[in-house]
Structure formats: C-alpha cells, structure tokens
Figure 1 (cartoon, rainbow, N blue to C red):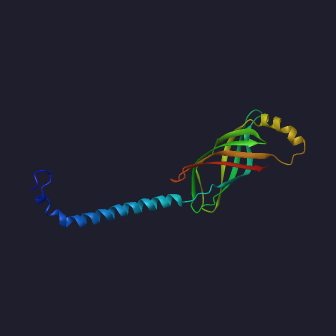
Figure 2 (figure 1 turned 135 degrees about the vertical axis):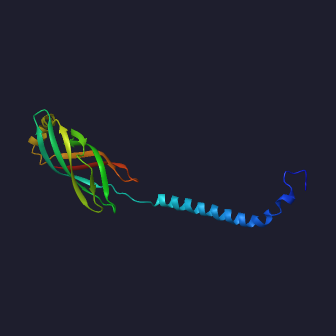
Length: 173
C-alpha cells in the first residue's frame, strides 16, 4: 500500500473489473438523457401549431334599455381551423362601431368550438349607443351603406399549451 496517497491499491482490487461496466452504463445513461433533451428541443421547435380561430359578428339583438344605456346581445360565429377542439372558458372583449367605442363585456357562458368546425356564442354588451349614434349620425346621413365594426379581446381556453390568446376582428354591418 502506498501510504503517501489516500487510496490504497489493495482496496481497489475488485474495481478494475467493474470499471468498464460502470463506464458503459454511465455512458449509455448520459447519451440517453442527451437524446431525450434533443428530442424535447426538437419537439418545441416543431411542436403543435395553433392557428387563432376566426370570429365574425353573426347578429345583434337589442335586449333592453333607454337612450342613455342599452343591453345588447351580440352573436358571434367562430371557426376553428385546428385539428383539436377549442374549449373556451371566457372571452373578454371590446366592441367598436364606426371607430367609436361601443361597449365591453364578457361571454355569457363557456363553450367549445369543434376541431375544423364552427360554433356560435353570445356576448352581452352594455352600451351607451345614444352617444355613439350622435357621433355616427353625420356619417349615416352621408349615405353610408354600412358601419365598420371591430371586436378585440382575449380568449381564455382550457388548453394547457394555449391557455389564452388575443384577437382583433373587423367587419361591416
């Protein structure tokens, strides 16, 4: 035994036979983990693709109200271009009419837009339409054949990879 070192060579006699096995096993484990990490990184780069659904206003219904405040139900048609169902928890949105803020609110209830399919849902808007119409009346008198609308907001889903996303849809009544 070499007393100048901390390890005595007689203590290592069974290890030389095990060293190639231990090294091979450790090398395989390390290479296995490197492979898993590379696959995970490749999965992130080419992982699931999500296209935002298209949303268009399908109809507007006056629920109640007077000149200063109204309650309007807006029906929206959503198209899901993805290969998976889109379970929506809620949508917070802002509605503009003719470039003027009309109202804001939240969807009435959760819903699901089927994969590669369509669904309609409703949103209740509390508006001050009288004030907006006073601003828009001159445009309507000029012979305008419709009004532009814009709906912006945030969709909250039950999807783990895509829990929420923003949207900005425009159209004409």
